[in-house]
Length: 469
Image (cartoon, rainbow, N blue to C red; front, side, top):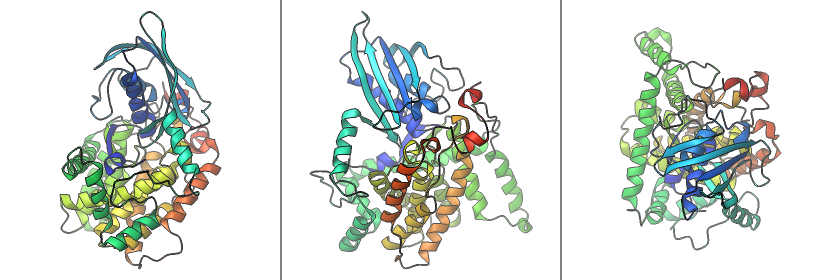
């Protein structure tokens, strides 16, 4: 599967890419695949989509997708609203018209992937149109049908572990599936990582307008990231869901302004990184529009580090933001192809770990690092997130997710700084770290992979049903 930077950085709504954005896309794709509009659709959420689906708004997302909405332009107040109870059976209306739906939750995952939704449909006469259409939300908002997933598995079985299969007939000038290949191509071509990715994007989107399309998308991504910070800082009150978690960004912002007026306070740039991450992730937790980067659960890290560069680096421009995103995107592509960015599949090391590695790479570029140092920065950030579990309390993307993004942002900057003082040579490569992450994810108990039955979710004692009221 050829991945574009426009896939890695997509626009969606919170609180989850795999549990909200993915299911919405899957539901819309299913209905669009039918020859005629169905009268009734039954959607069965399986595995992690069931276990934490209500807290992640998977039920609402499926309904919105069935009536024709997509994550890019769905109104944030579309019915059914995020702050309303979602009945398991009902009628909904959207751009595609009216539909009757039935939702079923089954915590037992399908063997192929922990995030699955199975659709069946009937016409007005009660005739069954389709039964058992399986869609999988594989992280970052990406979806695959059963047939597509089986094809991906067959490709992976044909190549050594830890190395993604190359696409047959790939037309991009610089196809890379690993960190080693990326560095080799940079050395051979004399291009920087962002330039290499740019050349590939030109070909991938030749029918969409080439680089004009890509650059417009990345410009929008940066604008949405800035809006997330601004709106997150302005918002007050508590986050929805029943945990009564207070929004902190507004208060932290006021404290930072006061601290700037008092030089003895000792606050520095890292406090602002924390603020930016908190603001974005609070917007995500409230169901706001965010950038999936590469997931919603980790959506605060890349924009927080980019805001840090804007505020604390000289000569920062929109071009700086574009190159940062292209560089970060390259690392995200490699991780997705060789491991996973899904918390339900490999734990939070696949979400916060991936985002931290991507942000470290982008920051290293802005610090003037070469390709080897950039790869080193990504490796450092990922290595020190290995084993991170995904244990959202009550199935909500709030505790520990919001603070975890702040910590991840600071870690990314530190990783870039460490790499800047090195020569790019190191014992552990990015490919080593990615392979280890994949293996660790396979060994990790399922209760630590976005099921909310282990870790902090169990320690704090909030069940999914308790936080829905």
